[in-house]
Image 1 (spheres, rainbow, N blue to C red):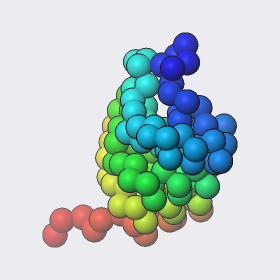
Image 2 (cartoon, helix red, strand yellow):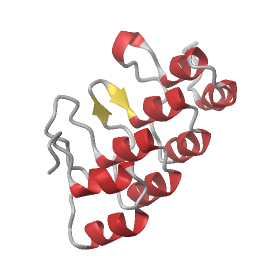
Image 3 (cartoon, rainbow, N blue to C red):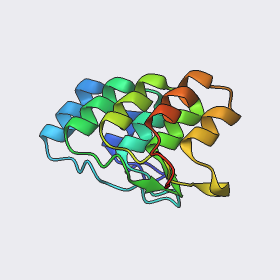
Length: 133
């Protein structure tokens, strides 16, 4: 583990090293590993934070949990807040929950709007569940 508690798979995901991530997974790396720091993020969170859709796609295909939270944030919130439309699309296709509220009570849609990503906000609006009647 790194000094901040990340596994080699976290690092490969964050830095976009697909071949390294594939080799680590083939060798038995834990796709659900949590960092040992206060955030307790997964490799999927790291791939989203690093902005690497190809790693997000790989991790989701191998069974990563699209609904896992890290310090109150989902991968979808991380991607939406940074305007990573392709990653948002991948997470939505994998069943990531749209209506989870993170720190400050904000959803992925709130973060996309606040940070100036209208295309991502539109995508999330169309994916959001209908309000109860």
